[in-house]
Length: 185
Image (cartoon, rainbow, N blue to C red):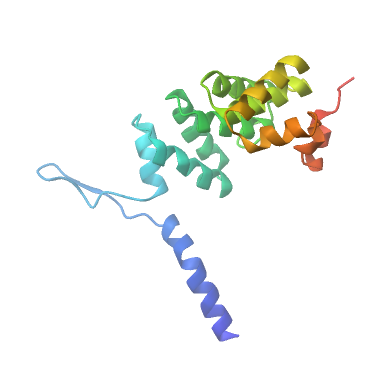
């Protein structure tokens, strides 16, 4: 039993380290001493100062998967504003599922459209699905299929799978999400 408890504590130690922060101290003569590095506080400080890059933007995945949705939204919004299309598709996912803000299918579809317009294959695929379903945007199955086709041409495997299934949306939709796609009339 003691061995199991010790193993659990060792396994959780890295998570505790992420939560801890070492305070920075500023020495006017020498600059910042002991600056934070590799922490969420540092990432969010960089974002607040207008700095984004691929590494910072990808940290949003960890942040949202850890349940810190409001923080993830702040990061993804800044990254999307700087043109990072992966952040746009994450904003869509968050808006579509009400993570860190109320569920908003219209905003989700708009994020997908922005990513698609920027050439992102996932954005094209997702916007195609939005159009085919009429979720967050007026339904237009033909236009939706054309976006899926572009994503497939770009090499996106799930888009090719949907094409091979004759555009049967059940091929790519978890049944747990079916309630979202039912007509509202």
